[in-house]
Structure formats: structure tokens, C-alpha cells
Length: 102
Figure 1 (cartoon, rainbow, N blue to C red):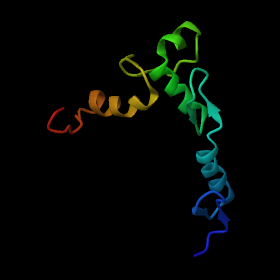
Figure 2 (figure 1 turned 90 degrees about the horizontal axis):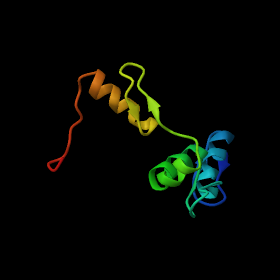
Figure 3 (figure 1 turned 180 degrees about the horizontal axis):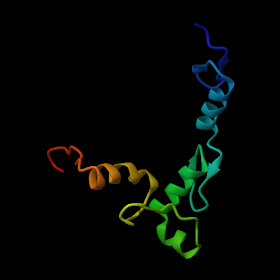
Figure 4 (figure 1 turned 180 degrees about the vertical axis):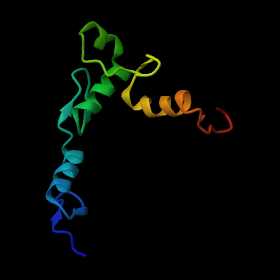
């Protein structure tokens, strides 16, 4: 099946225009870090980068926080993507499988 929306920068093609538009952001990475040369597809990627790599600067400048609070136990999670793991391990009783060193 031929997909009508092809990327002009690589060999990817897509069935829908919005899929191509989203893909093009991978090439362009329009969101830039205010502290270094890091670039990301979306602003949330830059915000996460800033808090991981430039946290002192982020605190000093009141950069928008990415911390979230668990609605059940009020634990503050440093990143929103830690939420599902927290819910599963703390409130669901399932510990994740770790490798031989962890």
C-alpha cells in the first residue's frame, strides 16, 4: 500500500497529513533550550531537559515546574512520566523487574 504523505528528508511515508506533520518535527526540532544547544520536538521535552540538566538555573529563574503530586498519597514526583510507575509500584503493589545489578 502506497502512503500518500512522504517525508522529503527521509524515506518515511504516512497515511495521514497530521502524521507527516508530527514526523517533520523530529527533523526540525523547533523547541530550543534557553541554556544550551539542546533542541526537542515539543516544549515538554525542553522543559524536562531543563529540569534534569539545568535544575539550579530553573529554580533560580522560576522556570515552569514539571513536578506532579500523587493524588492518593501526596508524594511529589520530580517528573510527570514517573507517575504511572509510582501508581503501579506504590498503590498497585507491583514491583518492577530489575536486572542483576539493580
